[in-house]
Image (cartoon, rainbow, N blue to C red):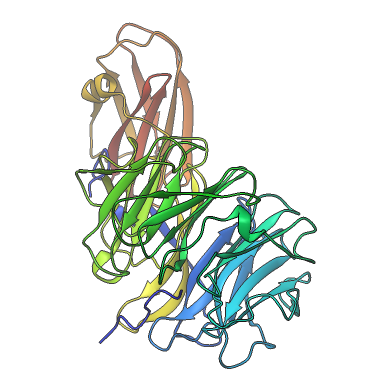
Length: 440
């Protein structure tokens, strides 16, 4: 089922500038009111996005980058009917992607192999044919194996298809392999997670369907929250569901530690936003939001505690590649229009804080008139530490190693850098410490 779209009628370890966390990569769809509402980052270089007009609901645009967002190309999927909207996008590589689309009662799957220049229908006439068919998302486990999940067309079982040939052909998962839907139960666009061979999606009845074998068989658990929510998993066992209206600031969280079989509502501190994603290779979860839910935050303990990244951006979507690479759809709230995407430029994710190291870190003089700093660590180093300095855009401008010592003292030379705010990071096996530096 389509999410309701007619909505319009920090401190992070140190106090460096919030805009250093997310950097705008601007582009505009031919329909300027469409925002990058669905994102799929294939890797650190290749990202596909699908547009959606949050007022009118029109969604027929795509964008892609093959160079990490340095440049983007955009276009229109010309062979969509005026009644069809994109509900999901899945990138395979720099030239190949698939979308699922719906009229509200029927759906199709289309594929491009030439970077979006042309799109070919890959689904058959019998797929998502009604009377209440509605594809909610499409995703891939590998370059060839994918899944597309839709609402129950007859109220008995969700309509789930898998592919083993990169989306050329699709096979429906037998109804016997999918627990029966409850009365009136549907899925919601974007409320799903895929990790490894596992897939999860939530329903309007607060249940979470889960599969550990690329969608071939399914089970279902009850979150206890009585509504759908976005999902984020850090491994095959541990994940959260965050509920709340799109654009609203009130959220609840349920947590699972057994892959979705059982869920427990949790009490959390800090600010969580309505769209969430696990950070690959870590136990962290990133959250973003838009409208009354604008900003971003992260959790390192299964959603119990959230630390704010910033409170200035409107994020319409989210996909995370690594602790240092993520993208979100960028919304201009004043005009309710898309302005491209934000790319994460932060060293915070993936780095737990070393409290002793942080408490013992001092830098002088700070501000520095000539870019020369002396750094003192009151806490001893049992092993070599990595020292880096990042500018306001998250770019590494300085790096050195510090030998193990009882009370290390070392110098930083930023004399060649422009005046401005920088971030010093000292990283050890125990975590990181950070400090704002000011070059006058």
